[in-house]
Length: 93
Image 1 (cartoon, rainbow, N blue to C red):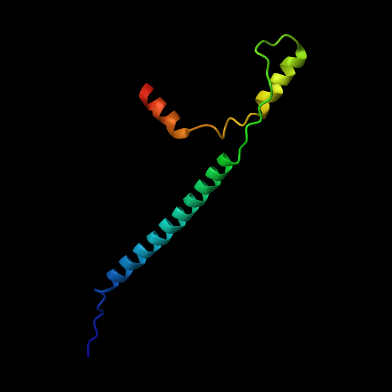
Image 2 (cartoon, one colour):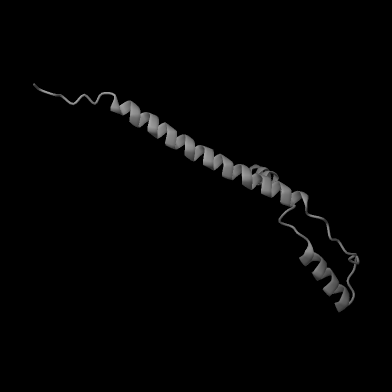
């Protein structure tokens, strides 16, 4: 008796396994991206403006130090709108 190895169906199993792995990687990536987006939006919503009175014209060292500390305390990174910046840069290019 002669036995032959019939492996015609194995490619389907490999294909199903590859799709399953890609689906799991995609799902994990989606979850990570979604979690980062919620952190970013919650961080931008909890920022409160801490403005102190800065004179229109600085005439002495004390006013200069007050203005510097006020500018240092301002959270400029959270107020940046990346999509608007990209659009403006693309319009220039």
